[in-house]
Image 1 (cartoon, rainbow, N blue to C red):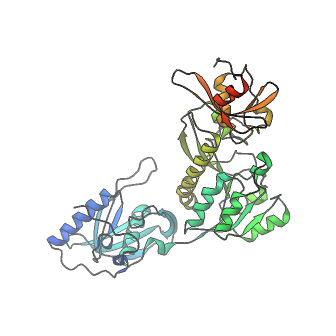
Image 2 (image 1 turned 90 degrees about the horizontal axis):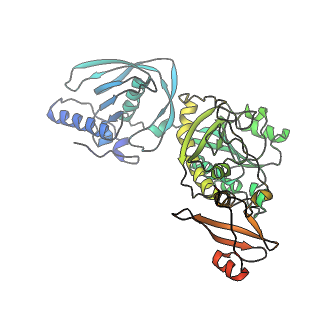
Image 3 (image 1 turned 60 degrees about the vertical axis):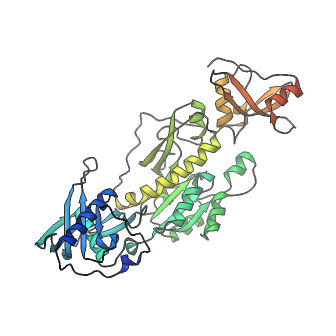
Length: 443
């Protein structure tokens, strides 16, 4: 019978366990229930306290993973297990726990162990295990000794480098994850201010203030004084997103595990400053998020991980950026432990599919009657934040704010903003200005 698994905070997880003395039918049923519960939860190990029993009893099993070259763990039942020998060699690996759903921590344990105990029928058993098998046994024996996954928590010191909104969810995620301690947030002038003259609010600075994280605001991250302040934090790893300044090789070498950059495209496609707008302009079906090791050459660092995102063909750059920012935060928390533990090896991007983007100017937003309607529609979505799309009507600039194609592929303008006027519907514009705005039907 599949049982409920007791979660963090349940007193049974901290209750001392009792030696198994009776290998009777009641014990056999408990063991079978534990195996069914473990398998039903897609777990690879389970200790009796996790199903509400204070017995010294554990089960484990893993089918193996040929792609990752992780060997199988045989179905194992151990009563009254005891670690009698451990190797001097220690190894970092990422561990999860059915009692702590969603949590993954980097835990250092002996690579090999020898364990003695009894099988389900009371016969003595001795197991020599290494790697994953050894780790699972140690993890479940911890449960029998009232030691939980969170007790192995060792904070990773982090610096965060960013200015724009892309990095806000990642900063939130790191700041609220107990595994990471953000020692310093390095930020610059608000990217939105310099490009769109928006209110002078730096979203990364505001987020850091919320968590009372030390902030270093700089116009030049390569300034010697700034570099010394970064060195003083002794970070294990750096995270960077939407920063807008060139980071020197000296800074890249400060963290032990380098600086991981969040890039909102599937590198090596769309390197450069406009990786969110350009896929919309190109009308591609997919984009995504790449975590890369920051290198001297822009966006050319080795890939740590990627997440593919399907595009619906209706996204604006603002909507897409916000969505990719959330994807990046989840991807970062999923990838970091494995990268730090050494299980996730960065790989070169390759040189075959490289493409580059450029900074757009106000002039890029101009469309005329010869501009294909499909290009106009994409530009309106891609340039919704900057530089905006406009056309000239009777010598006046008219911003095009939204548009769409119907099922018959006819193009319609929805909202406009004439020069010096408020935003209005296209129908109101036509009535008021006695003119229509038309574009080429060529695709």
